[in-house]
Length: 166
Image 1 (cartoon, one colour):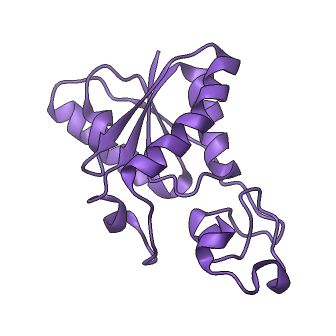
Image 2 (cartoon, one colour; image 1 turned 180 degrees about the horizontal axis):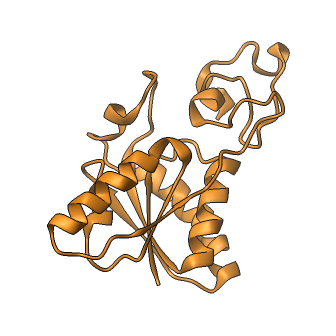
């Protein structure tokens, strides 16, 4: 089975890892990684996003060990538009987070218009930080939590800028 997954993944955190693991449980994975042009347009909060090349290198490192664990293959491709690669006919599944489920529904509309079978949209619940809020890259960049959802104390990030929290 072929699985599509998309995002910016900057920085990667345990919530993303949960998405990746679920995707690899289902089959070989193609990750659409937002392009440098698309990434800022997908942010709800304006913040710095590392370059496509930097994010791709970090994502490859993350995916390699998970792919080996599940004996699966993966590919990372640029995502130039929100509906991206998942509208292509070869995919069987789309793995999404709760806030991107509507995008999965739109992708299936496009697939039907193109004469392709709809994808099975698999929604992976958010992972919560120690404070009960969701783990997000924005919260990590802002120094609120680390990649595992541990709440950072003011002194943990004092004296550094938001990039130091990555």
